[in-house]
Image (tube, rainbow, N blue to C red):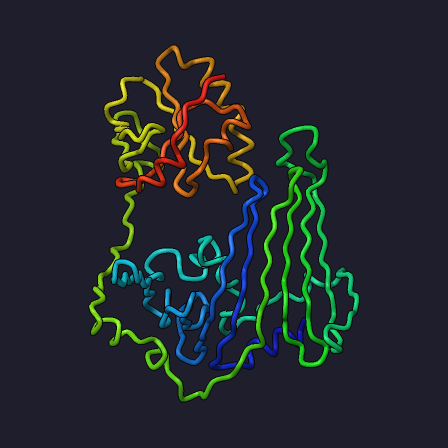
Length: 345
């Protein structure tokens, strides 16, 4: 793995293709991404050590980062939104925390000045070898077990298992495949990446030679700047009685708009969740019991989901009846059709 680190960091300017697949533990559906990444290590001086890069999908440039400014290219709307990640949480955390970035490419492949892999992680790894198309490969398996704190029912394992499998060429130490599995429920959460060899490009190649910003603008794309989030901290670090609750309009299960400010209940319980969040799912039965016990009194409960679309069957299977809400001001008819449901237990 030390040789793998050296090989990745040795390429100052280059490109690679990647295929990504992700499966949630709470669904049989899989999400797939396929694209190409061009990176430029020498052009970057940003503090969170992600080099400049351009990400393309389906032959179209989708996202780009020049070391300071991030470009999000929307071809359907002919719009390019820019912002400065360093003014918020940094581009490294944005890539690691954002699912659409994560499945497009893991951040270690565009790291700058930092080893992609921590070598101590592999001290207890199991290593096998195999021939792939006549070439020798190392199959490296890293296994970690701990008490399963996300256990929801008796069919779930007592121990949570995290398994990572790396396939590395023993001829040139290139990383071909990475699989990550987490077993905490009866079904595993799964992630897989397949990489092409990293191809070097001339060091004279620059970011804006590859990123055709001028051509996009000339073809009618609109360039707008995203304003950084400025959230004022609550007084003394706590929300006090009488303070305003500033949330966007919520879309209810029937497509109706829910304004929390007009809610007549004296108490309001908001459950922010999504299907890929084990602690969120773990807390749902408790919130459901609270909802059933106090729904006839002055307590209103709403489950707020910003990420998922089709949640009806998911909630029915877990017997969750407190109303779900989308954070969307203008949901599409398809989104409302997928989201629409009435449940009674």
